[in-house]
View (spheres, rainbow, N blue to C red):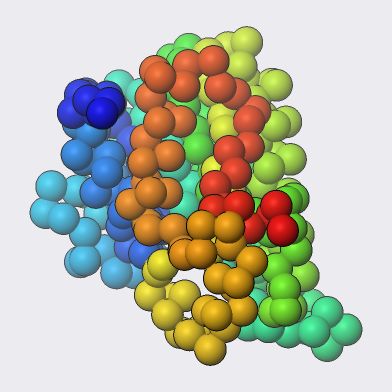
Length: 246
C-alpha cells in the first residue's frame, strides 16, 4: 500500500465542478492527501465539506475567472494548482438536428472554460515557476466515440481538451508547470444513474464489467498532481476499465 497521507501536504488546489459527483470525490481525496482545497462551481457549493472554501465561479466568463483568481491570491501568495473537473453533455442529440447554440454551450464549458481557467491559474503558476494542472477529459475524446448515444459536441470538446493540454504542456513545461489530462470511462455518478436503461449495454463492453467509482478517478487526479508524477507532462491517462480494448 502507498502511504498518501501527506502526498499533497501544504499544497493549495482549486477544483472546478467541485459540487458534481466526480468533483466532490476529487475534493474529498485532495483533502485526505493534505491539500488546502478551493471548490469552484456555479451552484451546489453548500454540499462541500466545511473545510473547503466554496467559491461561485462561471468558468465560461473571463471576468468571473479573473476575479476568483485575484481573490485567491489577494491574501496568500503561495501557488495554486488546478483541477478542471467541470463539464456538461448534450442529451443524445443527432448531429444533423443539433442547434448551434447547444453545440456552443457544450464547448463553452468543456473547452473554453478549461482554456480560461488554465490561462488564469497558469499565469500565476508561471510567475511562481512551478505547479501542476489536471484536466478531466474522457475516453470518448480519443480512445472511443460514445455509442449508441449521440454526443458529437461532447466527444469533440473532450478531444480538444487533450490537445489543449498537450499544447500548454509544451509551452509551460520548460517554465516549471506540468499539465496532464485524465480520461475516465463510465463513472458511477448521480448523472449516470439517470441513464440506468443503458447500464447493461455499456457494461457489456467494459473488460472489468463495472463502472469506475468516483474515488478511483480522484485517486488518479491526486497522483497526477503529486511529486510521484513529476515526470508526467502532456500525458493522457486513460482509465476506462478496458472499454476501449473491445
